[in-house]
Amino acid sequence: MSKYKEVYNDIKEKITNGTFKAGEFLKSESDLAHKYSYSKDTIRKALSMLELDGYIQKIKGKNSMVLENGRFKNSLSNLRTSKELNKIENIDIHTNLIEMEVVSGIKEIMDVFEVSADVSFYKVSRTRVLDGEALEYEITYLDKRVVPFLDKKIAESSIYNYLEKKLHLKISHSRREIKFRYATEDEKKYMDLKNFDSVVVIESHTYLSNGTLFQYGINSYRPDKFAFSTVAKR
Image (cartoon, rainbow, N blue to C red; front, side, top):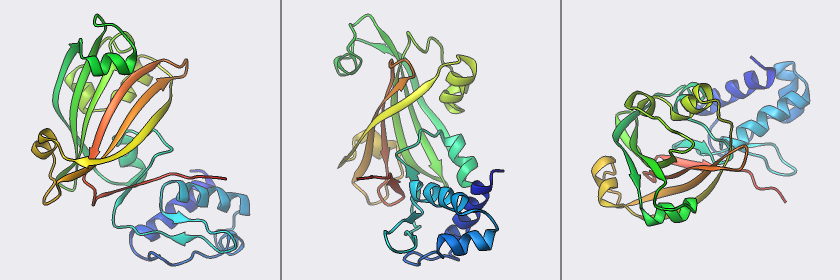
């Protein structure tokens, strides 16, 4: 394991288990370097990773502050599958396939991909379950010209793993937009919303390294269980 990941995992564990509480400040980079017996560059890289993943906030002129840990944190700056999150965060997100079908001629999707009615898409509807609750509902469209085959096993496991390992596609980046709105009937049906009538929605357009848009997705989240982080620089 890389040195900075060792530091990252140790501090993250202390934040998760409550050893470091929200609002507390971590020790200085120099003190942390002395504690872990690593260079300040290693410590700085670990802290940057913790900030990117929403565990701490770097404050100019002060040490890094621990952020509230009551929600599952997901970085908007990374493209990670649920399997990757399970490994990184040491959690157990389970994917349930609701429906998979081939569709075409849907004007909204044709407009997104800028294609004609003869282009077909896989429409995949899934939920993700954490601690026994369906907290995420996803509808994703994949261009069949790029992804010619999907089946239930792939959809319930990891579509991205299949695309990268089997089809050897190079996924580059995703353009994302966050919205807040009332839950749809399907979201109420398939998600454990409890007393919430609204959801947080991330609408994403995902591209290959050659610039091809191959996926359009709508992911809905129960608002009390997720926090989304990114880093803004001036």
